[in-house]
Image (cartoon, rainbow, N blue to C red; front, top):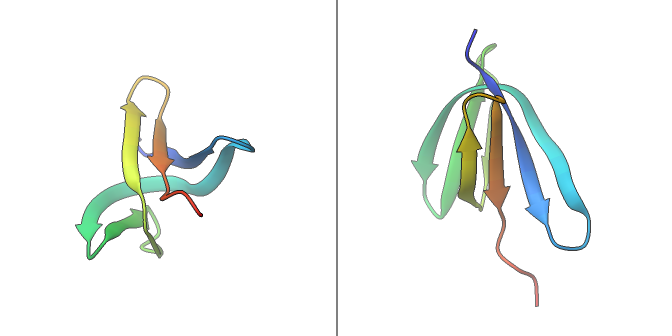
Length: 66
């Protein structure tokens, strides 16, 4: 299996798990649509910071609040 876990990267809190077993990532409106291996979907206003296929990690940046 090649799915990965998606994490939010936040300056103050570090990395926070957002979704496990992500199968697909698609652009959606002002962010991303993530779908896991069971067909569950999550939507987030974020951009991809980086992806490590070797470590099965997707790092997401969210817009800064302020």
